[in-house]
Amino acid sequence: MARMTAAQAAVEILKKEGITNLFGLPGAAINPFYKAMQTNGGLHHTLARHVEGASHMAEGWTRARAGNIGVCVGTSGPAGTDMITGLYSASADSIPILCITGQAPVAKLHKEDFQAVDIAAIAKPLTKMAVTVLEAAQVPGTFQQAFHLMRSGRPGPVLIDLPIDVQLTEIEFDVDTYEPLPVYKPAASRRQVDKALDLLESAERPLIVAGGGIINADAADLLVELAELTGVPVVPTLMGWGTIPDDHALNVGMVGLQTSHRYGNATLLASDFVLGIGNRWANRHTGDLETYTQGRTFVHVDIEPTQIGRVFAPDYGIVSDAKAALELFVEAAHERRDAGRLPDRTGWAADCAERKRTLWRKTNFDAVPIKPQRVYQEMNKAFGADVRYVSTIGLSQIQAAQLLHVYQPRHWINAGQAGPLGWTVPAALGVATADPDSTVVALSGDYDFQFMIEELAVGAQFNIPYIHVLVNNAYLGLIRQAQRGFDMDYCVQLSFDNVNAPEVNGYGVDHVKVAEGLGCKAIRVTEPDDILPALEQAKKLMVEHRVPVIVEVILERVTNVSMGTSVGNVTEFEELALSELDAPTALYANLD
Image (cartoon, rainbow, N blue to C red; front, side, top):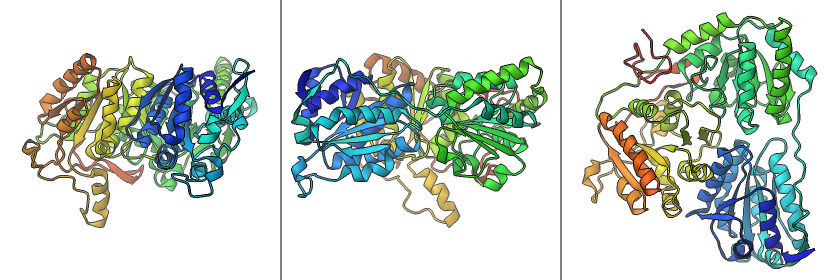
């Protein structure tokens, strides 16, 4: 067997597990691992500017392609604590990432050594495993177990903490015979699927709610096949957006309090049966549970046993990986169709389509300062079905989900449950690194953009081109809207007179100068008719210079975005579309 340092063994295992790219920052306590990367070769490393940024880049890498696992690396102490937000975000959305941290020598862990923090204890609640490896001989087994856990059951993140002396210790390790451990995923039985289909058959107005678990399982094609076999309309969740194309006849829109469509909510309220697959009944999807559940029968399929009944008790629950369940659903549906057992759903589907044809929000505003709805209208024109959108939180993200269109899985990439500000820039860099041939378009409000703006330099240094649409109203817009209920507008203003940039007219930070100073290209737009030309120019600049390109759109200061407390009580603050002229990029823009 070969003799090598434990750090070298870790590097070789990463390669055996299919890892090609890492994101991180070197430091004293993790330098042996970096030396092993240099010595052994075979791994590409992207140097982040902030370790939290590295963790979100790893998330973006994972979320971009089925089977990907992002890896982020940092030194001891604050590097690990900086990664905690990334671990939270990944854990909340069932995203596997591996965080590797350096640590003080084993003998000094209890001596309050410099940057010797118990990161395993801190990270434990947010990971499937968090461990400080105290024996060098345990490094191979620990990494092997990490990948097994990340891929098995409900996917999620792992943290491995490596004391510097453990990394440097030589061990015997046979690289050639290393094999990943078998992956375990629970699977539905045919009896369970038949019972669920029996319940669906007895319904008059059924729906399928398609969650992010379907995307994680790489099973969107099976979902579409099931919908088409049964004729049952589909409601994608925010994390499941793209499981069925937005322009598919059986896609009836998203449901929820914020990231929802008027027609989606109306259709949910008209339904009498819901089959949820790979979803978690998130509160911003369901809202008031009495309104959401009343008069409807629910079947819930989820990979995590404790998720069944967590939010409300379904009428029937199935513990299963989404792909395993959908394979059986499709098999059984084929048999029932061939036997003439499946009810005709064309009337119900037509009702849903009529709502989708008529219940649109207006986007065609010509006001100056620009209304945000116009931005998404022009984005629909500029970017085709292959675009990958990346966003995280705020009014910008909420309204984007109401007005943009997504046609493929993993083409809406969003930190759904955690929603950390600053996530978008590094996550977009991770996505663009994972799929360098695609058009990646990130979307942020000004506050999210400012949180981790330094990561733009990573895109410039490593030639990671993408387009970042920055909608700037110099406000914490979502918090300002929430403060209306408290009759206040307090500590949410980002506007100020910038003595170095009077041309920004009181909007504060000059994002164009900052972006250019970080090595990127940037365009500022103040007129609605200039949005589309700017987006087209950004495409050209991205190709020419191979760097991130920011398109900053100066918005009106105050816009209240459609939202409410119940799917039956969403407040519309703006006038609604009355004809196709009001919403020219709506999928069914023949409203009159």
